[in-house]
Image (cartoon, rainbow, N blue to C red; front, side, top):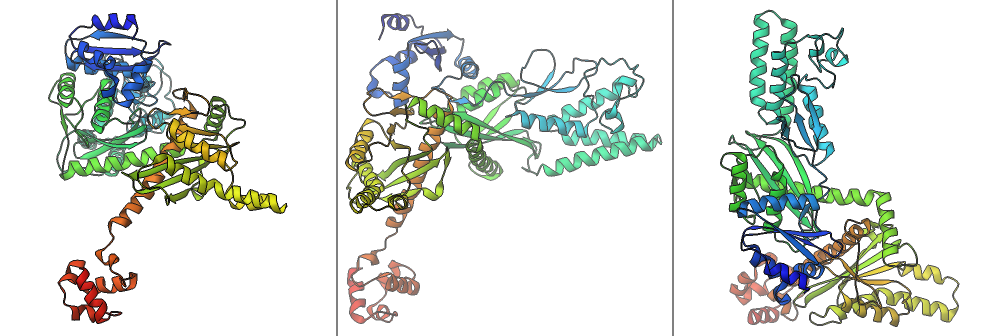
Length: 619
């Protein structure tokens, strides 16, 4: 530890606050909160043995830190969320692409308000609705309000002296304050309806419109009444599509969480009254090795830090970290009681599970979209070639991952990415045959020998016979990759290189990828390569590694599942699959067979009395 850091640690106060860690380049790499700054910050610089791997990696990069003292832990929570959104530190859980989420703004301080999209919230008296996850979702809501309510979309100064209205008036999208075709009170009523609709109070809007329609009919203004009738029907059709979500009338945000590797997706359902008036999904990065409690806590703070409307209740799938402090903080911001609930059953649990299912779908779609973007995948491959000093762009990449539980049912997976996209028809699964126990190095060597051994044998045969069709024969043994990635650090890389040299395919580049922090180990270099944060190359490597892990885990579960349902009948000599099936079909279970007498067993199709006595004795 440097003398500068030692002096900074000695000066830390025993007060609540937020600390900001920087690396040698001056970049913010972590923002944290503390009830006592002195104790929390010093914990990073004690013995490394008790630290989590992520914390150890952070500690190695800390060159400087600063801190901000606040009055309470709740205030520290809020400041931490704001600083994470501003700096997007690599070691923090952070909302992806959080340049500033968009909001709908109604400038009610203007005499003739309009609805617009903004990414900046100001203390200007305007009403803000959001945040929305993307420009697409906020624009869809803006378009819907424009179809349902005739507010002005122009930016001209309203004097009421224009000679004629624009096209919006004739298609019933504006009531033309520019030509004084409406009064100030009539226009304010339209804006109030928009506000109520965006707040999820569609029933209030419909009630007001029906009263206006009845009043117009009584005054014999039938054209005006017909316009209001059409508007009511349009709103009713919109509300019908927002299916009934709960029988209890209350405002709530329902959150579902899905995770995959370093990424996560949070889906939010907006429940207003008894209806779901909308939903949105938010992507997070930096969640690897973090518990759900920490992920949810960080998300809720960052999400509501800029939100203008906070419901009384939110439902989440797990207990967030610092729940009481978050409730205290948002109660103060809301001005009335705010509650976080973790429902175990009932309608809220059903909605949380549905939100989680939608989050999983959104996460899968986000990955597919990235892979479908050819410009991004080409850039990722070029960056990977440059960062790893490869002789050519790695068009075919193979990644290997092992899976076992304390050495039982060991398996391995091989996934293939071609031109940056997965090629599932070329994935391969390996059941480990020669390795006993949890030996990751030996497992990796066995799998690579089986994968590249066939190519080596084909090449030897072709060379010995001078076979002109050697290329076709080797193609039958799968194409050779331009890059091999093995899951693990230096040890796994050394084990893989030994096999590659042994089989004569040492010209193929091989790298090791450490799980936790995407450190890439290359031959003949003690220091790992760390791909630039936010680079397309890093994203591609993460996708490949996560896909290999998913494929290995899925296969391991299948193998483990089959071994765990082995019956006691499988150990009896003379009982094969057909006789086992006949017994289970007749008796239903091993327990029933054990309780049956010998004559009943002997009467089973395919059994003799001697075999029945053997079954009875064994059971």
